[in-house]
Length: 272
Image 1 (tube, rainbow, N blue to C red):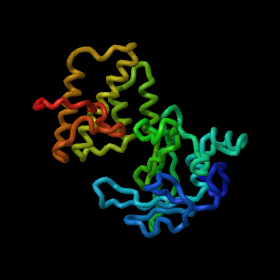
Image 2: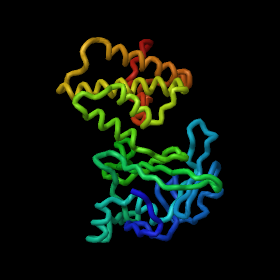
Image 3: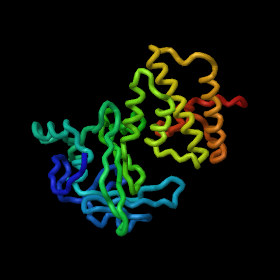
Image 4: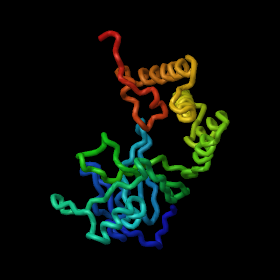
């Protein structure tokens, strides 16, 4: 699904108007094409979108994000939004006097979209994940508005070949576990030089194998103590790394987007 600036994408945003995301209000607001110019960090842009990223932070921080309405319509508008706009003019929020978009995604999963950008000298790709909100993100019971995830800006962009290969191999009657491991590592951009990442990747690969076995064997987990011991070894390494960064960190701090999420849990402190 490639974006074309010459195409018109239907939706609630005005096609030629620039909108900047306001973190305080949690919404896109009318702005200008210069919206990213004064933010801290490196600016990447095209004629339709701009983003500024500050890589000096421990976790790269998006300090500005803006785009033309046409681009935002392409990225975020769902089929239900289009249908409602045709039939009723759109979903209207009378309290705030605005139209509200429905969530875009597929049964809770994200759409991945990317577009070419430059830093004024070199070419890169901006990759976005567009999805419905998770329960913890909702600001109310009826909040189903679209969320946009921003991935690293890279010179290669998102290549789903390895990801698709991993899925295809998992669906085989007798899949090659080594091939699955390689495809998953390629899919996730794994680098063995990062020990912390290697430990998380090990936990992720082992959990994938256990879940595959459970699905293939009609609800039976792999036999023996080996899989359990392997998971314990993986998680111990992850916990140790967490405590080096933060002495108060617990397994409950591991988030769903972490490769080590299989090690998430409620920590029972033996001293309390």
